[in-house]
Image (cartoon, rainbow, N blue to C red; front, side, top):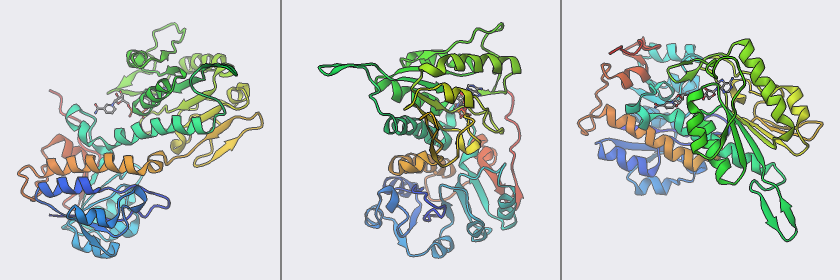
Length: 381
Ligand code: NAD
């Protein structure tokens, strides 16, 4: 099959879904690779580097969509991109089918098969294709770097001839993939790092990374953020109040807050309130990784950096993976390549779209003119 990667059309998006290295691996599966000219430039991959890897460089997106059987891209497609698909085409990209119903129906109408990378089931076997985790890991790391860039002091404490410097105090709220990456980065830079999550099972992971788990004094155990399949569920009003009271106690002493708290299919919970921002010292920084879903902080403005009257910087950027486009393209392209490996069991360039396979079925949102989202619930053993 011919696998083609177009240039991303979303403004400012620097990632690319195929790298010269991933193309080499795709060719080992018996596929041919195509790339739109300039598609890798912003991520640091030139047309020449693709050509050296055996990739055919195609001048325009229109030609690429015409020639390729499988289109691999990063962002959900635009309407124009979906209209370029047809019955013999497969699209592999992030899609967020819950929020892009009309595009999904259009793709089904066109007869195209769509594999949504955000729908890959989060089971051990599928970890190599888990692009959400790859991107969350980068976002968590970059959030700390961004915080450091906006913070006027060191992370680590130092005793110098010019005086003693206290370490920065960092609080990470939410310890999923992004939160754990932020904790690891923050502790490795030498900051005193505290972390909170409604799922008590992450306490051990937090502590093993050298951070302190913030426990709540709550009547019941810290289990109110009852989990469903490893994800958080909304907290009770009492638990939420106890959590906010704890954060109010910490706010005057914390230099940097990184918030990553999310609950599947809901707006981000508001956890860092306006009064907490007011309690923080001037020069403190908040990086809100939940900005795209409304933000964990009351004052976050998505895609912007603001400074409050009391001198607190609040970063609401939503494109952290794109800001590290070389790294994120490398990981995303590897996730896509692993998906192609599962779709090409004989390594003979022939795709077997096996809807009996839980991972392929889970990620497929349109197939044979049908919308196949949501997938059936996982089989109970
Ligand atoms: P996420 O991005 O959905 O959410 C981030 C974190 O926010 C979660 O840890 C959640 O518990 C926390 N949170 C929600 N409400 C909160 C609140 N009020 N206060 C504080 N924290 C709050 O999370 P994620 O990174 O997608 O990970 C979620 C789960 O999925 C984890 O258990 C993770 O280990 C699991 N996971 C499994 C796999 C796999 O097996 N392949 C891959 C990735 C993630």
